[in-house]
Length: 177
Image 1 (cartoon, rainbow, N blue to C red):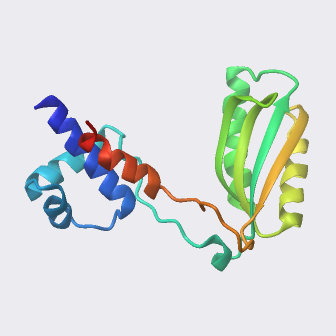
Image 2: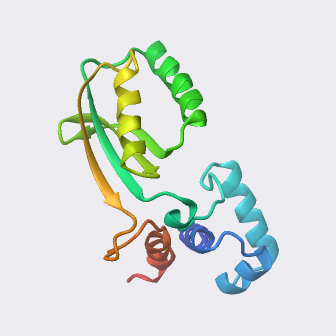
Image 3: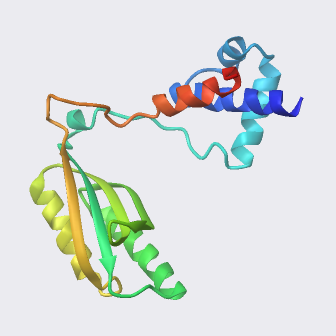
């Protein structure tokens, strides 16, 4: 039953990624299990942190954002643990006051950089202001910064931000030979 149980969990996660507003009753019909089973599984997945949040993805253009920016930063030195915590707190305060929507800020490696920021901007001026603010952070000591901007107004779209393709992959895992 272990792999069958895991398969149902993945299908539940998949269905919730596609539409997190569905009731446990609706989900149980789609998954072919009882409603109490879905309720129990959902509750456990929430407690274990598998399900981190319920959200929706808006049409960012319709709420005033016209650019998606990926900003890659290279630091002169690695931050000490206490500096990381200070940076995290300062970032949270600054983001609460900003007009740009940072959706991801992570350390990593690649392209000769140490981290990446994904954010939505109202316009290029907003993006330039964000870069200026980043350069002014005394604890970051940025040695290099590169960006990649995506116009959300472009009529040619290949695959806008969505989780449905990943949801479909998770939902089909149990159906593969």
